[in-house]
Image (tube, rainbow, N blue to C red; front, side, top):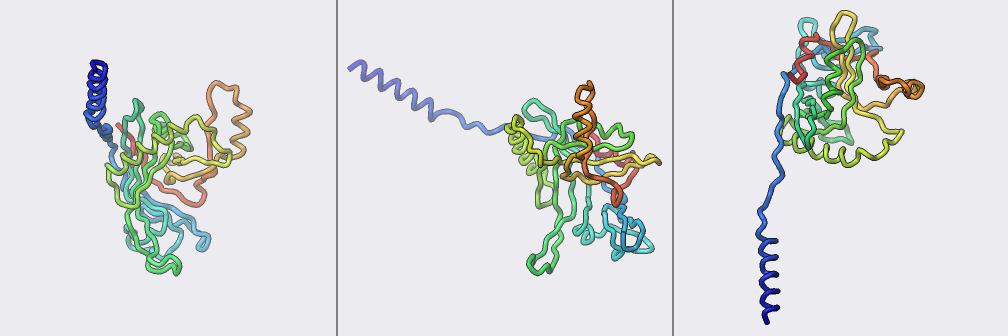
Length: 258
């Protein structure tokens, strides 16, 4: 009889312990620091049709349809059909004892109301977030000529910038990246890179982060120099021959975390 009573008490204690545990939510993440905001740069695109370079604010467009002889102004509809940006800034985040930078680009995008007919284009603000390790991102602070800065990954949102949404997507993506870090990269895979260069006059030219593949000749060069103490920089099949954004170093530096 005593054994039954003891067994009953132990069972009751275990059940109460199991169902009496506190509900614990995941720790809320916040951005630690935020840079200033880059809101303007001249977009230059070469037109094969006209044989000249065309410039628009914050937009890469090689068509003359939006040219205004008096003044070039921000045109959301034009921007939504070309590569563009509304604003660019960088946040820092501490996650799992590691610091990350997230460069946010808010831009005009869009889609057809009737895609099959390609009719009724609807513009809308959208957001991209590129995740960098600080040491990789900070290569942009010492640009002599050309730099291709590699992002760990990217997140996106079909809306304007909402901080909580981007943080949630970034932390989920970092969990995914961490769990897959031991997997071998497929040879056909590329990287998300942020191409930036300094022109001879000291101005900064850049393209928005893009998915690209490493140059084949660079792969061979890296194998040849694999015994060197310092790794060779990696370059990708991206160039500035036909288009780029241009601004001053002071203005571009607004995206740096201080």
